[in-house]
Length: 566
Image (cartoon, rainbow, N blue to C red; front, side, top):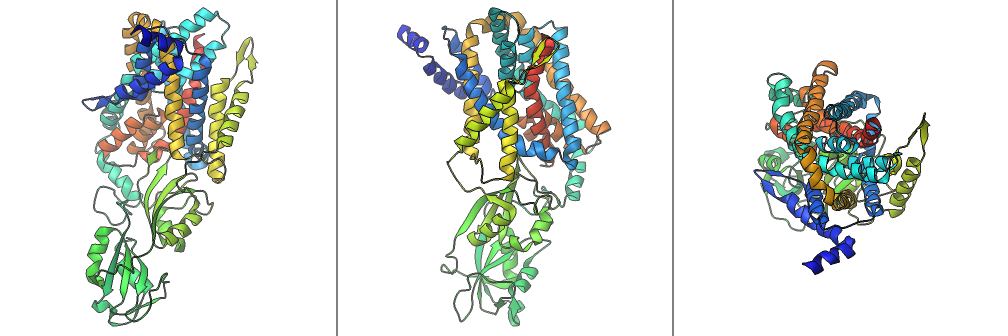
């Protein structure tokens, strides 16, 4: 054991990765469906390992934290800028007010409880589940004109307050928005949500064929044209028009004439005769229902010998931005392609006919390769599987952000700056938005974004926990109970304010209000709970823009809370 302890003390880099591994293991443990999550698990394991007295250079945590912040900014950049347009301004205003409420309530609670700077910053971070505040507040404390010992005391208190308040910040907020929130927004909220879905073109619960479902894979079947419908010569357009039931997309992909060679790419005017073999493409349940209208299914392996493709596409074409799914359904470039999912930031949108596409949306397509490639070129930029990250783009963005954050402006005798962390976050937003306009520049695969987010944040948290370890228990004993009570207050009150704002001031639909509250507080867990409670994905429509605003402002509040408390 002595050898083990000395090894960790002499090689703190090993201790960091041990903390990371144990933290993720602890974070996965579920008790009655609830888990601590990776960040809290890593923090607690860091505190535990830090009890043996390990010192890690602060440069290590700063480097990984900047990597994390750039990834955050890059991810939310398109939604943040898109929200600045006219249609998104109400949601931006809503999110800004809720974020100010989060700051004001945390500040007020800290003053009432007589917390110092460190506990106030940790309270803001944990109760609002915004881990990045730990790093931003630490950077700001290091700029204060106080002694080094006092700085370190404040910095070590931040993770204590964060750990005490984070659990209720996550679980309590999800419970409040999913269980209490709907009751505060009126009666029959589920029926109201279904009516709202109907106004967008369909319902995702009922078997409503006015909407385009996402289903597990495009289905290709071969049918022999034997029905009475083909007693006279028909065209591809005739058959597709006959097959469409209430706007369901069904396509003729290939044809083997009764006497002739395979027609690889039939057009709308291509003739179809009785006895021809047809490859039809569409949702399985629709194809099964339509077989009787065409004839009988047959096995024709050669006719099915073509490439099908599933592809993600970044929306960037100006002609597409603002178009509804209904308009896309009827455009000629769409023929033969099924839209499976649409992702906007961290949320998946409901596939309703009147939902509009925005710049930076990721659309999942599936169909015959030639058709998918054609439609992908029309939508924007095909995001083909890649493991290559543009490190020039990442490095330049973090460097420029750090330089922006180093600019100091004096307000009287008080030096103000964004700090390196704030500057990198803002530059990440700019670089992410620019990539959405020019998708061929600065590509960072989603897997790399995930790694930058999770590795960057959790290695930072691991170092924070290890360095704070010796003082953590003492801080917990001193302020634990008062921090928890304050955390409940700070977690719930801004959400109550948001619900009342949405209902009486902004007059949002109840589902939109709840989604906007979850987004403003950047609580993805709450979004899932709300969607389950309402049996609808409609809250995702307001989650993305407000999430982008909340993720930006709440992180910057790490600077503000330190300045307010000092």
